[in-house]
Length: 405
Image (cartoon, rainbow, N blue to C red; front, side):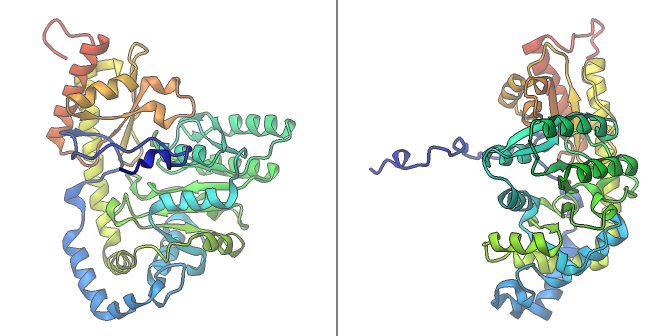
């Protein structure tokens, strides 16, 4: 038999494990609340738009060109103006196959092996993986309760300038940061933009969770605060509608967009999904997102209550400002990479913090828990099981002699 192992490229990532279904207590990934997927409204939208425009599926781009389905781009442009303070036309919006494709396109456009990219010290694991695969030198900058620290960023940029290094971009998640769930103030955003301008560095703004701020109101997006193309903006419907739709978007001026289109050689992102989403969003997005936020907030409260009940003060976390994740710090005695492995054997899946931090050693004390998909009782039972595993392996949390915890 042919031995493909002798033919594989040497720089491939490790082989994927065979999927055997979700674990019983699944706190990983970016899954969302199944009960909040607007199935009936999506069915109605699909039937309506297909009857009206279904024949356009015969062409690449749905008669809208390579940027994507124009009615969806027009909806996004209007939504960004209303919600995020971004003034853009439909021709400055590119539909992508999830925000992940947006990350890949920006990396392909700007990053060559050996380039430096500045990120938040705690950040999206998928962004870290892709930057490392692109051969980038990834430099992490600390966060505080207001998101990316402008003081630390200034120190980092000055140090780089002194060594003759100009970063290709600053990657930040300002609104419902992943994994910390902070929302950066407008003042902090302006400070970061000023630093970026002073050092001639663009900002890559990832706003995938911005619709999930609990109260709905969010600060102006960084792209909306500058008149030039200093900020490339990406967003997604994965967290607001459904992850499996794989519809994201990228906002940039033509100088950048024209070069991105030249490397987006996939024949266009999913056409049917774009059509259905545009039809749905025009009538239902605003009411749907209010319902989703309420459901997610309730689950966040259940998870925090369960952690407090099972772990007591040894599990430290902040009340999230929105989103679907809780970022938890455990005592130094706990190696969360090891905890992740043994917990999975007991049916509990969690994300180890090392995958979400540029400082992987510091990440050994953190876990990221996604609370959106499990039901309330599953959240409680899963945290109880996780506490059992943690106690057995690391001696924490210490059992209460009265039988509590």
